[in-house]
Image (cartoon, rainbow, N blue to C red; front, side, top):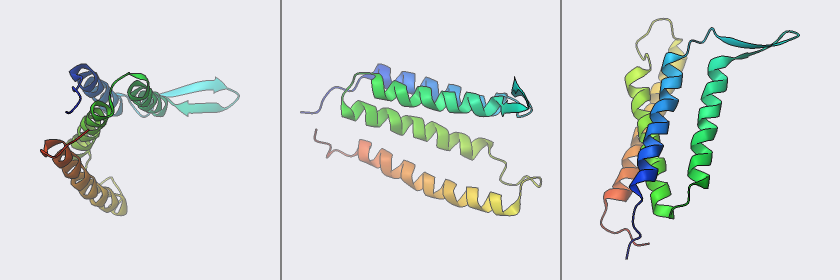
Amino acid sequence: MTPAIQKSKVLIGIILAFAWVCSFLFISSTLIIDFGGGVTVNFKLVVVLVGLLVLFFYHLLYPSNAETTKLSWTAVYTVAWLSLMFFYPFKDLNVDEGTRGAVAFFALVGGLLVCLLWVRFFSDEIVA
């Protein structure tokens, strides 16, 4: 018998993933945190790293079974991959040619991983 999936963990994980993606999209890269003495840190980098830590600790500390956690991580990864597909400027002339090709290659490999993860959850052979 398969354990019950907790929908709240998956939905909150998706909402946190959307908030994390929005930190990439809507925070300007020119904002800095000045600690004084010539020490500056990019504000966007700090928000992205804190968001990633929030996602990690949310999945680590929210009590649920293993299948729910795996499903929530798969949904978060799917949101991140889809945002890469929609928002990365693959044809932008201001981006270096080698960088565009590398991002495109790993996006294709990441898409294969998304498909494999969802096939695992949509298959009828899941046994806890």
